[in-house]
Image 1 (tube, one colour):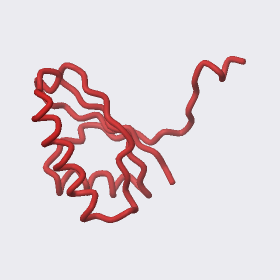
Image 2 (cartoon, rainbow, N blue to C red; image 1 turned 90 degrees about the horizontal axis):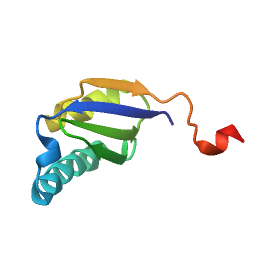
Image 3 (cartoon, one colour; image 1 turned 135 degrees about the vertical axis):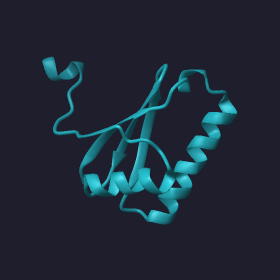
Length: 90
C-alpha cells in the first residue's frame, strides 16, 4: 500500500504542551478508527510551525478525507516513491 508524507501548517505547534499534542493525536486516532484499517498513521515529526506526518493509505483521496473529517490541515500530500538511508550508499 502507498505511503504518504503530509505537511501540515500548524502555527506554534513546536510550542504545544504534551497535553495538547496528546489531544491532537487522540483526535486523529478517533478519525482513523472511524475510517477503518485502510488508512494507518505511522508517525509524525513536530517542527516550529509544521507537522510532518507519515501515513499508509490506498490513495491520496483517503488521506485528504482523514484531514477533512478531523479538521486537520493537509497543506501538501506527497506519495513516497522510494526510501533511502545511509546503507543505500553501500
